Structure formats: C-alpha cells, structure tokens
Length: 275
Image 1 (cartoon, helix red, strand yellow):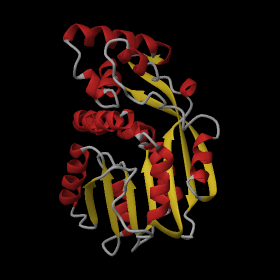
Image 2 (tube, rainbow, N blue to C red):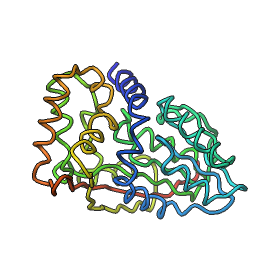
Image 3 (tube, rainbow, N blue to C red):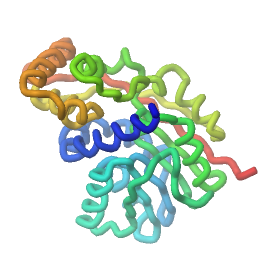
Image 4 (cartoon, helix red, strand yellow):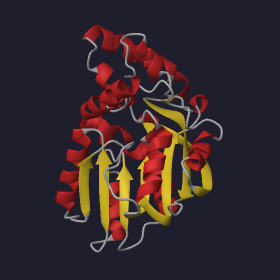
C-alpha cells in the first residue's frame, strides 16, 4: 500500500509541477544533467532510454546526440511530463523521440533493447530504486551504460527544509528517504546490487541561484516534489510556509537573490550479459 501511495503522489504531484519545472530548475539541475550525459556518452545511431524524463531536459540533448538514425524513448510516471516531452520533440522536429507514461520499476520493453539507459534525478522518487535500476540493467544490451543522478547528502543541500516545512502543514507522503541514495556510498552500492559492473560514482558540489525570493519560493513549492501537497494549502498556509522557507535559506541570501548550496551524486555502471 505504501508503494502504491508513493507512486500516486509522484504521478499527480509532478502533473502539478510540470508547467513550472523548467522555469525554476533548468539552470539549477544543469551540472548533474551535463555530467550524466558525459558518462552516458551517447553516439549517433544508438537507442537510449530516459527514465523519469520530466520535461525532457536530458531527452532533448540525447536525441540530438543519437541523431535521426538513432532513437530516444522517454518515460515518466506523470502524464503532464510525458505530454511536455512529446510536444517539445514535435516542436523541434526531433522525430527520433518517443514519449510514454511508464513505471520505472516495471519497464515495458524487451531485454537488451537499448544501448544505454539514464535516469536524471528521478530515482529518489521511486519506491524501490534498486528495482528500477534492475529494470534499466535488464533492458540495456551487455556492456551498455546505465547512468543515474540523484541529489546528494541532506546537510549539503541548503533547500532541504522544504520537506519538514510542508509536512508540518499537510501530510505530503513525499519521499521520506529522499536523500538516502545520495548519502555515503548508497547509490554505488545499489547499482552493484542491481547487477551493474564497473560502477563509478562522482559527487558534485553545486549552487542553486535564484534572482529573487519569488523564484526561490516558486522552485521549492510549485515546481518541485511538494507541488501536490502545496496545492492543498490555503492562502494563509502558503504565506506562512513561504516565510518559513525563506528564513531557512536566509544564510545564502545575496542582495535580492539567493545562492543555495546543493550536491549531486552521479553514477554509471555497465550492464551484464543475461545468465
């Protein structure tokens, strides 16, 4: 029941966040996404899977790398995210992109049907991250790359108070173990347990820059993982939560804006042959 509830929260929460996501997070997530793309090393003609694709911030550069002779399949649990990727692919004429709504823990693809699989900042939201990684390993050909990026340690992410701030006002059921994969060696260990070999892990310090309090608040509440819970707030609750959150990031205020510390962990592994 808990896993079903978590999937429901993620599906409808990201439907709420989809229209705000790129405005508030494109620049902030770029370091992790660029490292993920570097480790995935997409090549012309390849077939690549993008799991938990969001609005396509990784999907689009993957498609450009594989070119018209390749293919990128983008999957996400949220209908609005899948629709956003499909619309952007059509606008850009990137016909090598296919977008499908799909659970990361049960990928509806044959074994060894991709050259590589990536998941950029989506594993934190999956009830069973190890199962999602096993599925990614299953659908990648032997020797192909599986690459995942997650947020790092909680104490290195200055925006982390958003979760207790929301939970004090409404039970959000959002990612009680959000920072687990980014703590210590957890992501690398989980990838190895999923059957991946030659696992390499990179830890990246980063800064989330927002030009104003409005941008910082928009990213935290409307454009991120608490969007579903936030949609239940009345005006008074929203104002109080905004004030509390801004107080939590006050140490990183610079003039009218904020430079909030963050950390990412990016790991890659090699898919084994079937036994």
